[in-house]
Image (cartoon, rainbow, N blue to C red):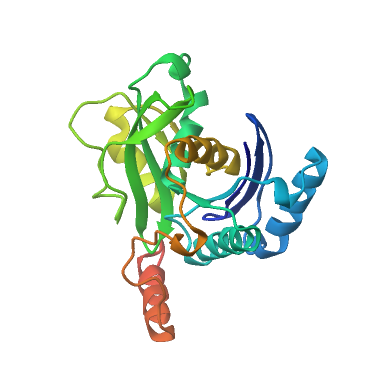
Length: 253
């Protein structure tokens, strides 16, 4: 199977190409450069692999949650390519892709089915996108995250993994948001944390491959982003009010 994957939902721009289990990708923290980099990177990966666009079986994308502009751009790019090629699209949860970043955190995690990850992305506006996952063996034989609860956007002081026990792996920039409030509060329940982790398109590709095998690909026109916030854009007045609140709460103000 040949699959092109995009993950543009955070400050990282990430593109990957999956060819029969071999995956290659490009990943860079590049705020506001996603539109400039994503398509040239995709073309370069295809050229390096000697693959024509017409040989692709599907196009995958991290459908959010994440930054509104990045999520919208990623979905639009994947949708446009899939429509042009008359190929299906495979939406992948950005938080599920992020959960795979927990694999290097603990020795033996790859073999420890059932290990749990709390994935968190800095959502700005004093909130984080979060969801909990447990690892299980996928239809392709690989290790994949299974959602234990719903994706949601919450203040760091309200975000909690399900249950009351410990042993969680924490991944994502949400653990660094608001001065590390989430990391500090959940510290007794966490085995390890990577607060710098960002989702990678290579993980989106792996999850999309398994989703494709499960029959979860969709027609391109059915591809939809996951924003979570009811209000994804602020008016100028609301932006000014938010900045004023942040300035008032800043140390030394």
